Length: 342
Ligand code: SF4
Image (cartoon, rainbow, N blue to C red; front, side, top):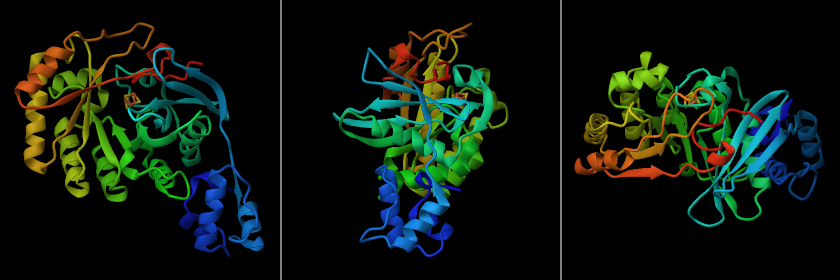
């Protein structure tokens, strides 16, 4: 049975015979308003019945909804047939606008050492509707304002579940469905080159984020096991192809870990990579520096105290950087903390 909140009008037309594209658009708009598809001036009775017979509206159980006391972040713990995962409502600078940090997998196989999700291992990929539903849940529970964007930076490696992620992006960006501008959607990866190239080809308006950790190979390998399979060279070659094809600058994320990847040498190596990338593509990576958020248990890292010094080295090389505010740390909603512990 079709999950009606996870299809585009074109997919609905292809899946349900006797439905026109105009009717499919009206039907999907109704679905995303939370209404049943019924006959009206825009949808014939036979078409409405065919859609209702072919489709259903599965839902996620909201196990917990925790608002941060520090900032307007809200974390949602969700359950789908026993699988637990999380998403986070993130406030944007513009008042009453929000972005949703969505999960693409239950757990993650990539085991980045600074990430709570990586400790869980991979349980399974999320279905398209389970990804879309995270945005719908956040949207439905907004006291006011609207969902402006989505970032695939929750649990899981989105490029390891790319079929479903691409389908979910199509629904998010569809005007009669969630109506999010594709350029307000970012897919963040630990660095899977084939997936980066496929993302560029199939969703060229969507932005790319890459977790760099360190531009020094040994330092990157220490915290990101995936670096043993894919060198930063290969990842950045794919990112350069992405930039050339899409004309979009990538975001490069670095979580600074005390004594691990926060030295002046790390900053200089990052600056050199960034300059080489710009020379090759004409695009300047947007460098986003994150404070490490504790992940509990035998926490292997400490938060770096060298953020200002690191930024000074980048600045001396002519590179602007952005210190990302990662909110919701009091409710384990901050970057790297999602572990479905509820
Ligand atoms: S940072 Fe992303 S890719 Fe790495 S373990 Fe966590 S969820 Fe997986």
